[in-house]
Length: 394
Image 1 (cartoon, helix red, strand yellow):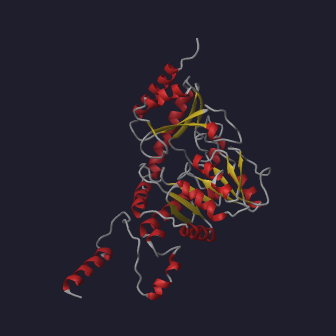
Image 2 (tube, one colour):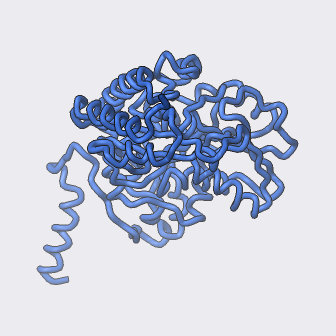
Image 3 (tube, one colour):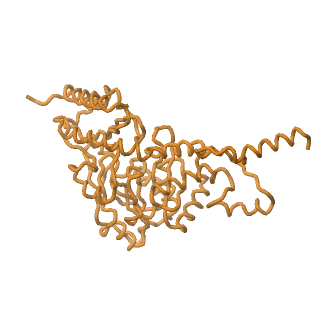
């Protein structure tokens, strides 16, 4: 080896190990291929799946650091990262279920998960039944092959809260595990304390906090369950980039501050909406006036910036006039970032236990961190447009 090669090798090693360079943030470790000290280490690399490093897809120091941070936030012990919140839900089901198994799903789950359960899972020979969005009893729905109960509290758009502890007790007595989509409650709950076995979270929302990363996480407390899921996810070729993990790690540093402020704003908005003649119903379980507030207090330590409401008029043209004229509440899916968002859905396409007729529109708002007075003026003008587009009969 010549002097140039020796110098290059020395520079590379010192850049990695130099103790004088001690950054506050975990660096971005990019890698596909990793190298091993010797043949024996290479042949034993699969033993590193759970805690060490064998291939970039299965973990880097950056992704491992984020997994530890998410596990702490969820009150769990082990976390695995996936490319999206939806992947966290669907991959978990694929890892645990077999043909002939039966699954119970809350009626208010995330729309794409609902679509998956009634299409792909049933094609795999897995039967699915839906339970009430505010269910407190599973006894009429459990079957001998019920293996998984999939919950989401508060529910997507309509924000119902199931009686989580009661459902977990019944599911466990029947030999089923409970999976919770805890995206809404991330950083404001510990679902394991109420009996949940697996917590799935879309880190794209409050975990990242800036609407520029898609990522999900699956967290558990049981070591054997973690290994079962990790093996399955690795076998599906599922992983995340260290660059994305770095961005979520950075967002996690301000999670508590953002949640506190956005929860304050969400509560003010929901209370203001209740006083507006153009609004028929407001949905925010963190609001003491919400019918789900008692369960909210049982299962959550705080709220966030998400609020839904049902306009008194159900004419889509009037609702569109309100939404299309917003300046600060931009129209878009997802939520949890620093920007304010608005979305609308027709519940007729996403409920079966309590069927809705077509044209049953819910508007969802997410309060971002723009100047709050600007947001309130935006909402007031929007409701005026809603009124003007469909004034009440004389």
